[in-house]
Amino acid sequence: MGWTPETLVVVFVAVALLVPTATGAGFGSLGQQSVDADVVVMTADVNPDGTADSTVAYRLRLDDDNTTQAFEDLRTDIQANPAAYTDRFERRMQRTAGAAENTTGREMAVKNATASAREETFGQTYGVITYRFQWTNFANVSGDRVEIGDALSGLFLDSETSLTLRWPADYQADSVAPQADERGNASVTWRGQQTFGEAEPRVVVNPRDSAGGDSGSNGLFIGGILALVGIAAGVYALRRYGIPNGNAPAEPPASMVDSDDPEAESAAGTDADAGTPPVELLSNEEQVLQLLESNGGRLKQQQVAGELDWTDAKTSQVIGGLREEEKVETFRIGRENVVTLPDTDVTGGEGDGSDGTDSGDETR
Image (cartoon, rainbow, N blue to C red; front, side):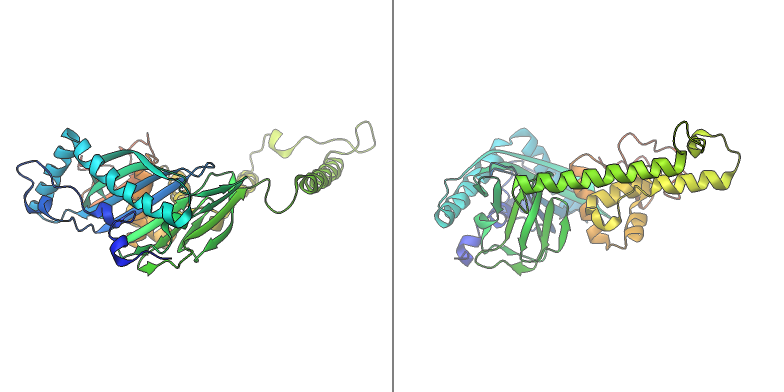
């Protein structure tokens, strides 16, 4: 049965929106009431044993001096007294897990909660409050099969909230319900506003080498494929190099012969690029990283949005996730946000169309 409106107050996200009152003297009214987050990002990284390493991030738009100062006071208080926040959050999540136990019949626990706060820039400056915790038996495990989502059955996502479920890279999804707004190689994302049905969200994953048949059949199939590949390689070698000690002399590969022909070098480069996977097979995060790599490791955020034909909001959210995972860095040049791969030289102007002079206002 789906959660009642009263239960939704404490389920997964909604309960955590009630950020504890800061004890810092200067925090003001923002610390005395529920924090109205502009963006809420929920992520559950599910392990093969069913435990989820979960993250709930609340992004607050810092668009005036009072809000900015209030967030600074909150960040200082979290750093000085994190237990005041994590203990309260963990107790609430324990109640949420208890409700999920009654629905699923599995014993659950929430533990190892942490809290942090920092400023980030996604088109504009946000204060980000992040809770991380482990939720044991979050997913149902049967052999190698992992069923994800029943602990959140009937969850409501408002228009500012997204939910992402991830699973190990060596697993594949056999079914996803309802249809996700975004789907990667090992993740699905839903965005609000929507209410999941009684048995939703639901994602069923299996190890890639065990899906679709028994191991004996898979072994025969893979063996046949390898045999065909071997035959094709042999035919190719005979046609290209001839039969050793036969009438046709073997020729060295073109890549081993020095050439002054720029067109030949260009063709060789094109062949090498053919190994790049199609964009439609990449996750949103992989698309951004590939785009940065192909542009010298550095682009303006607006260029990323234009190249990938994304909205500013989607671009900000994807880059924000990569930032949290320390896969990219961001800083500002004037009014522009620039995204770089870690250890990229930011003094040059290639890739983002800038002259290489920044304001020194790095967003980290």
